[in-house]
Figure 1 (cartoon, rainbow, N blue to C red):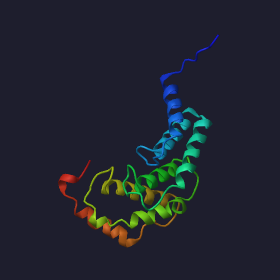
Figure 2: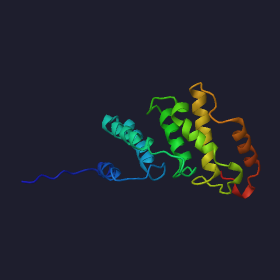
Figure 3: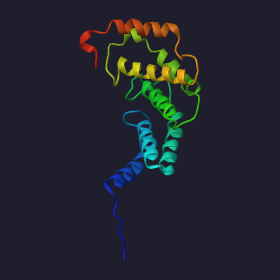
Figure 4: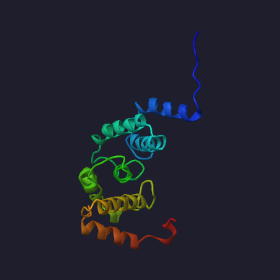
Length: 172
C-alpha cells in the first residue's frame, strides 16, 4: 500500500523552492539565486538545520563565477544587489571571508558607472540602490578593519549627486 506524507505548508514551500532553484538562471538579489541563498541561510539558521545552510552555500558557489561587467548596476538585478547580498551574508556570519577581497571586482565595476548621469532615483534600479550597496560595503569594511573600498573621487561624485536630489524624489 502506498503511504502518503503530509507536509506542513512551510515544508511544502521549502521543498518546492529547492526543486525550482535548480533551473533558475537569474543570479540577482530580488529574483534570483542570491536572494534564494539568503533566504535559505536565514531559514537554516532559524531552524538550526545544516542541510539548508549547505544548500545556500552551494547556491553561492554557483553564481559567484557568473558575475561580469555586462550586468546592470541596479540593486534588484545587478551588481549593487549582488555586492549588497554578499556583504549581508558576511556581516550576518553566514560566509566567512574578507569582504574587500570578495567584492573588489564588483566595487570596481560599480565605480565605473557614471553616477552623475544616472537619472533613476529608485531603490530597485537607481541611485538609492547604489547607496544601500555603498553603505553596506563601507560598514563591512569598517567592521573588518579594512580600508574603504571606494576611491575619494567616486565618493565625492556620490555626494554631489545626493545634493542634487529633487525633494520629490527623496524616500523615507
